Image (tube, rainbow, N blue to C red; front, side, top):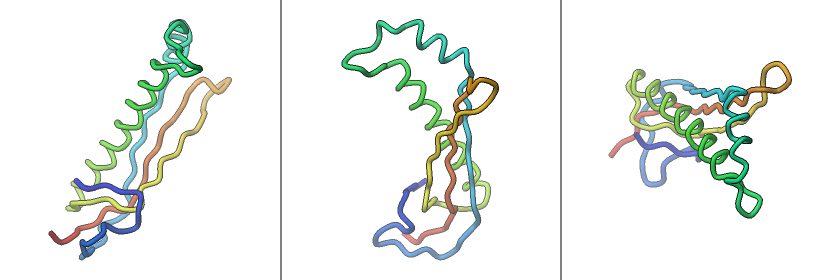
Length: 107
């Protein structure tokens, strides 16, 4: 599955628009507590644990996006937008969402 943030795939013609697709992943408050408990993991002002969790959440959202696109018969997703939102009571959760347009491209 080709996926891009651009509105098209260079050199490939879109032959059909299948619809808007989305995927989400939510990190709960306990993940943040666990990450802050391992504060020793911070090097140069960055937390490897925190970054890994965000990376995993982003990949889950993109995997869901691709699965929805496949269900619609698409072989690519264009115009992908990634958003990060703080949710829940006391802002205890983080949601990563990905949305885009499922398309069929030639080639």
